[in-house]
Length: 278
Length: 315
Image (cartoon, rainbow over all chains, first blue to last red; front, side):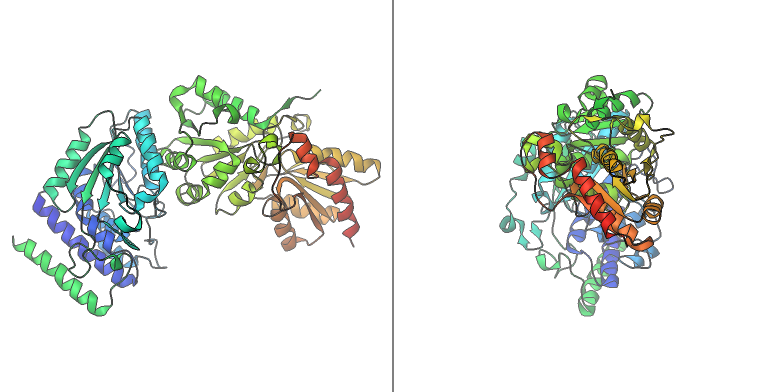
């Protein structure tokens, strides 16, 4: 897809995310908006997946390690053709299986059930290891939050991925600088992330998580890296695309009220319209 | 003289014996391969063995990922770490997505011996039993363990398998018509006055208790519950109806394991006295394995005492 097409897809996905969270009156909007461009690049360009054959053993895998960001993942899957957009109305509803956190048993296109933070990178590592064992050419991607990586299991997985030379594994950290209780720098300082991952033996790539050309170059660099796993540290803005949600930890896991919804909707619709005439 | 072998040793041999037949079998360990007995598999199939270091949570997560790709991963550590340390990974990354991962806890119970309380897991059966859809298997001897490993390789789904450290006498090989089926208790001895439902190394002790009681004229049925979940409700309810009282015996806390499962079952189908024999809500302590078991009453005499109590409670 062209950069313009991806921008448009991400803009539409942001609107779907807002509608999902407003409709469900709950859900994690902030980190979903921050990761939306990364997800659009992945599902629009990077991942070799086929919605008609979602369990193809040869497919690339994606693990949403920051599993609370289903309002980011589900619209990305819907727009990629895994299920109808209409289904997003079932988000967090007893009427369906579009749970608050990704469910691989029921939701087409979900490669791993996640939600308990810190567990996705290990699962992705296992998938990458299976690929090496079977001599398959697929790649595995895991999207983590910069708050999530406070979990020790992430670093256990980082050690293991390096030990087994999983160069078919690419981690992405959505570095939006915020978590529920505030700034990651205050809650639990985790920087410098580049030096930490490098010390664990990973190839570190820095990218602008809202710039498709930057992301494309980063994914290409990761795919071309041999012998070690890669991590893309993608700098993002939490709540990206909705003015009053941007850089505000309060919007981590809260649904907007009617007035806030209308304002956010107007902003996101206007962004879509602008892109449509470009 | 019957074979005497630890279930962990039989397990390690079974992995090697079945490796060719099940090419998708892969084995993960957390720096305990010599103790969990996966070392022989590691030596024979190095490309299918992964030492994940002292990081059980990550080992479980890697196994989950391998499971999504059609592998049959067996993860190995001590019970306290497989079922305890990594409990939430087992729940959320293995059981919730119904992945084909076998979580193996070696050194279950007090018979760890000298290492003491930190390593004597008496809660693993309860922890694993509480997870929806999780199979819980605890074979009593080497013969049963070999059959269990094959059955678990055939079973597509999450399961917990407990292994023991100390050598135990093989008793199931001399049982006429013995066959291993997940979820089916094995009747080792017929009896009419009481039933002992035992699991793991308490099975041999239950047989010894039945011998002791036979001399006193008490006829005891002995059922071997190698599978704790799903519980063989038919065998439990038949025992309740036909013998009128039940004693459960396990090298595990009396809270949450086989005793709880049987009591829950009996209360719903045929309420009769159920006396639970196990570790009485305390931590273990260091000592030679057999002496530790004796210290906590996990002996044939301990079972016999509970049977007499159960019989006395019958109306």
